[in-house]
Length: 178
Length: 286
Ligand code: SF4
Image (cartoon, rainbow over all chains, first blue to last red; front, top):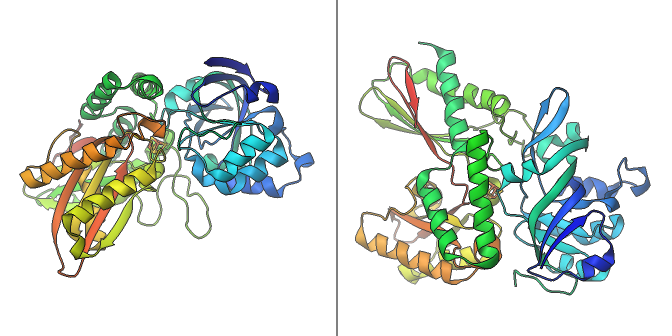
């Protein structure tokens, strides 16, 4: 089945998704790799300048360019998700994330968290960075750019019809990678 | 001799590598598109669309623009040998801003990003000397996701070539969807620890679809392609027939006590571009 969602997406809708479904998302997503996960787990949730629970999480270290004072995504495909396995269950719990976008799949801890909190892990075609960047309509904010550098910073993207995202791990304990 | 012009040539070389995939890789992907179905076909279709868009818009096909890696064959009569390293390094810095490419060099101790894709030992250049007065440069930017799946096995010679083959197949199955399959796998057998990996990386410079000229090695390559593709890992690990586009094997003589097997994994974004610099400072990028 194919679905087109506006983020945030209700848990009820997420629970209806199954491995092999294709989704497209419209709305806000934020990028976070290892370092960003680390920082965000240490920070006080209420003091963050953005609200992750309203967004999808994108494992991505984009290539960005500043044009006339505004950031633009040049190439922005997913990064290897398994690196975030050690953080993700805690991260989902703390920030109420229910859509993860990445590549390569994740492990058992995330699988359990997806079941417990009602989430999906979706795969975007690895390396398809130019195509992904074309679906980024706006870059409203970036956090920790100076400390973490371009790939590791948290970028907020406003995306339109971002996909195709393959539901690769669902909230029912199924994983396409097994 | 215009230093600026040659540094500009290096930028052109890097841009070509980052935005235009070589035709041998594109053809192999098109073939994969023909034979795949369902989710696997969608993945290859997305890759092909992405390659097309990158070429037309002059943007890097993947956001991980890699560690800037060069293989340089220097004609011994080239008059500016002492300048080559500086030109390449400055070209990399310029390319970072002008193309742009992602700043990818991080200090391993402090985690600080250098910001311009240079740093200790980087750009990583392999030098080689040839007759004549031209310089040939191959740019081979190497992404992290696939490099992370590379492996060294110091096998016991007793396991023989069968053991070496099993090692490659097992490791590629373990890698699953992580290195952005379909991949191209470079395997170096023999030499020592470092040489086997170096051979594995150099093997990746051979175009996709070209078999080793030694018939025995060519047969091993074919067998490995078949066995890895039988795993069903498929494009992006989502299941399918195409896990590897090719496997290239190279060998070196080994110590009687060791059987090193170096595996270097290359994602579908098998970015390569070539440049020739002539002794009068003119250059071409192909
Ligand atoms: S493995 Fe290759 S295609 Fe995948 S994200 Fe890294 S550089 Fe890009």
